[in-house]
Image (tube, rainbow, N blue to C red; front, side, top):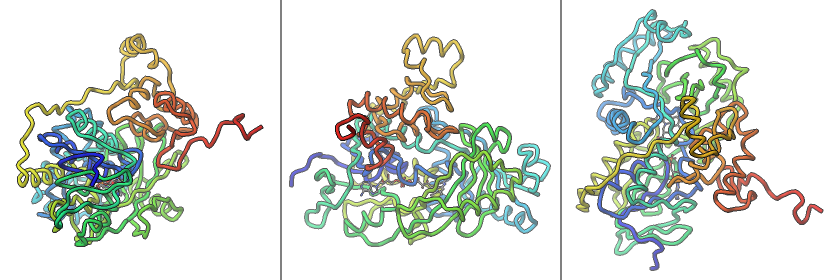
Length: 485
Ligand SMILES: Cc1cc2nc3c(=O)[nH]c(=O)nc-3n(C[C@H](O)[C@H](O)[C@H](O)COP(=O)(O)OP(=O)(O)OC[C@H]3O[C@@H](n4cnc5c(N)ncnc54)[C@H](O)[C@@H]3O)c2cc1C
């Protein structure tokens, strides 16, 4: 068998789980590589979720979800500075609007305390209104001070960048199509780019994790997609709508439709929960939008619906076991990080630690002495003082050209995002790294300019630049080119 890459460990899937695992692996003396089928990381569930670093009172005590949630939350507090992560530690409230719901808050408090969540307490109506004056219909709330809201794609990319700076490799546009086995043991993966050797393979393929496991001979679980839709508001419309994270009292299938203000000041509402048949169905529906609005209005009656700028949807990877599936499969050499639905974003660093510890205990890989866990800080033009801006423009005049007018993102920041070790290659890749295109016009103005910058920096033609996945070219051909005459 000819292998185009030789490794010790292959990670399948470049969402937050796979990226966190790659970083954890890069702390050890081994060759590790992540394969992602899409042109960029974070295009699966990591792209569309509530972005909340949950405190950890939701999941049943003792479940993998609960254990990794509480540990993962604490780990984000520790690594935020080193990885330059964009996180607002605003705390969360579960809001009760009826006496029955107020009773449920006591159950959540008891479960959270058993799960080891620090600082939980029930707030009275007056205490709630002091923090969130628009929650007029709320009679009590469960306060969780350790919760926060993060920039989820930024977290995945930061994990990946950290892994790369410690010797890991990432191959994008590379789909795993099978496994290479010898005497029933995995010795590599087959991809659409060729075979890669590996002693251990970690399956972090999101909603496709059951199909990947099956390819290796493990059919012990299935994953069903459950869609959640959202509406995002322009930030000028919601400066004082809600400060932090407001959940309704949860139901059996979902934490409910929440209202939250992101790290960048946009309020969003969602998600609903709808089982779907396709693992690619991230469409938004008018029924879904109505459901979200009607539900969110119970918490915030005065939602600025005229200021909604976009809708989006993500797919939860609901496992047949009801819990996260983390660890060795029955197939030798395969390890699953599967069924990672919410709170998977929060749990990612803890899941990574658990799965890598299990492999290290078996394989005996030694810890590196020179692991560098600190990423260089990214220059964010809007956060700079006037004199810092002047100095930055003097150093590099591309910081003097604003490309995204809604979010004030400069050409300097876009070029830096393209040139980074896990650099952006698509228009939405630039958006997720810099926020160019995230504003009110949703890339209507800056999209074509970002396309030109990507083409120039990557040395490709503008007709080759993708918006997101393969087949999403920004331009089909140039006017005036042969055939237009
Ligand atoms: C509506 C919603 C709300 C949520 N809210 C929260 C929240 O507030 N807080 C929280 O903690 N969690 C939340 N979650 C959960 C969280 O988003 C997920 O747990 C997390 O993003 C899962 O990451 P992942 O890396 O496991 O999967 P993904 O992000 O889906 O990544 C899997 C990757 O595998 C790749 N892949 C698949 N097949 C192949 C193949 N054959 N070859 C190569 N690559 C492949 C995919 O392209 C994808 O990039 C929410 C989820 C949803 C849907």
